[in-house]
Image (cartoon, rainbow, N blue to C red; front, side):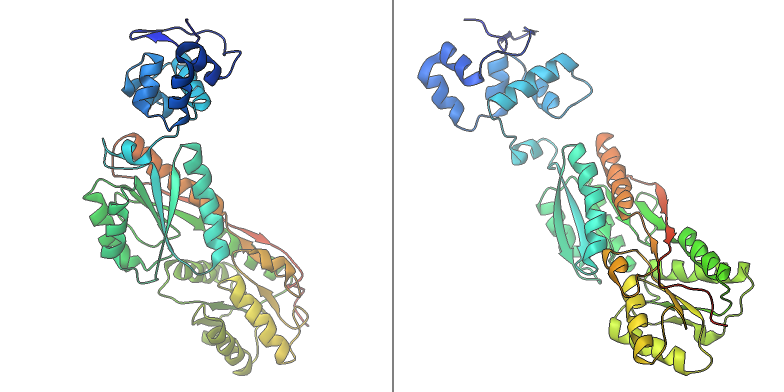
Amino acid sequence: MPTEYQATPKKVLLSSPPQQPMFSVAKAVGGKHAIKAMRKRITSQQLADYLGLARSTVSMALSDSPKIKKQTKELVQRAARELDYIPNVIARAMPTGKTRVLGFITQLTTPEIKFRLLMGVMNAATEAGYHIKLIPTEWKMDSAEIARICIGECLGGVLVTQVWDETIGELVESLHARSIPVATMLSGFSHRKVANALSDDSVGIHEAIEHLVGLGHRKIAYLGGDPQVASERARRDAFLHAVKIHKLALPSRFLVEKSFIADEAKVAFRTMLESGPPPSAVLCGNDQIAMVAIRTARSMGVNVPTDISVVGFSNTEMAKWCDPPLASINQGFEEVGKMATQAVLRALAKNRISTSVRKSVPSHFIARASTAPAHK
């Protein structure tokens, strides 16, 4: 009894979608034994035999390969859905030694930033039929151990963010030796075969300084984090450039790079306020430091924003709930994650390890109530 899904080895009969479930078709064709078999997890070979197609054709159709005609893809994908076919990721990895899984390597701090990066990564990966495996590590990553995990998991590609740049090189060499492409996000690491997706922090910093100057501020300080972090150095340099453009005086005590740790930032900011005439505004290396600065100022009887304006960085969710709501610089983390993932996916599609592209997403200043006209 012919059905819409039957096909000869070299000819697929394409017609309108079936009017009855595939199990009903199976019953008509093979009776209760066919139904019992289909209730078990079927293989791609069984799906191919059922359709009268080569297994390779079925595999490429399920992977949405451009080499397969649209009608054939629709036939295979419709049959797979109705037969509850579930791809075996281990079996699919056997020909290439890779699964359709990308590794996301990061330290588990600043969770909101990681989540926003991961959302961009997941959206791009899911669209291409890939999954994400989170691989947590420390700031000073054990590159050899992480490489063993990636290789052992047969990962298709790897994305790395917010680990010490000095530890990335060894990881890249180990993964490239196994033909696994790598891309970094928000990193100072540079390699001719590794993509680096960045946030262009200079745009938002220049907008913030222009905003403060427009409010009459001429004594603007910078309270940054750890200068070993590439993004911190980039923000400091952008701040210095903006200060130079606006011809602002900058005493050495107005430029502080200490740590992203709250307690250390608190001590550094208190020292800045007590060591001489205070600044009228301060740009901070992230939102957490900015919130510490607001609380520290308040404990010293200094009002924000009447006595001093405060600007954060990253525009985290808590910024708008701060008291007062924190002006900050928004970074497109989702877009950064998406760009890095697409670079890895392009390399995989071309069977290459090189993802070499350097792209950045512009940041933008978000004005809120933590800034006000300079105190006369």
